Image (cartoon, rainbow, N blue to C red):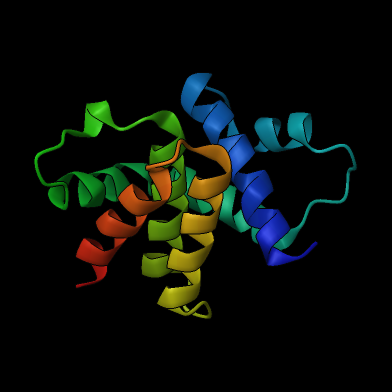
Length: 126
C-alpha cells in the first residue's frame, strides 16, 4: 500500500474512532477488507491514538480566534495525523506531511478545510 493510500485509510479509521470510542486494532480490522495490514497505516492509527492528548494540546496551543471544540471532526482527524507525522515520524519531511494533510482536507472537508489545515500546521512548524 502506498503511503498516500495508507494515510487515507488511517484518516477513515481515526475519524470513526473519534465518533465511536473503539479500540484502534479492532477498528483497523473492521475497516480493512483484507487481513494484510500495512505497517505505515498501523503506525499512524496506533501513534495518533497513543499520543492523542499531546497532539490535541498542540492543536489547541496554535489556534487563533478558534476553539478546539469548534473544529470539525474531519479537520481534527487530519490535523492529528499530520502532527503525529511531524512530531513522531522521523523519515517523512514536514512539507510532505503538510501537503498530504491539505490534500486530505480538500478531498474530505469543505471548501475552506485545506486552507484551515494548512494555516494551523504552518503555525505549529513555525
